Image (cartoon, one colour):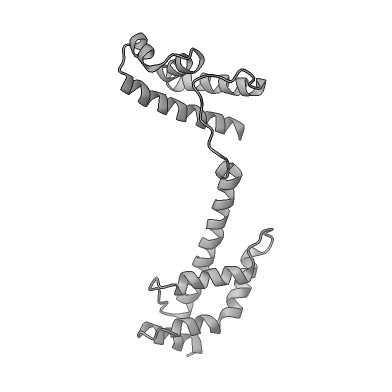
Length: 183
């Protein structure tokens, strides 16, 4: 039996410091694994940071007690994978506009909108019309004609409440279509 196996056995029996000692005993090996995982990546995450984050996930009070050396390494590798995946998701969200400020689709069109914006809005409205013609009509009447809810209710023979709900859904669909076109 190796030292790590003994330490993991002690951790399983309730020794609070045994898992931390096991981690310290294999720190060098975990750092080599982390360096392999990060090889070829151009980012600020270093093997040391990755191993330390994995340590926090393993020993951070979550009650994880690996039963064997294999389980210990599997758990450590899974923690490192989650950390790298979380970082990639975070960066991906930022690239897709996660750090952008929210801009509301106004009821009126700006007078000085760029031609490409108009083309994109038109294409999105055309697509919206294929998905839901009633929502396209609502957007056209509200956005382009500038009608308010009482006028729309009278014109379309629907309640203001249902029109507001459909307006919110139509705006969300339109914004998603515009975002999709931008990508």
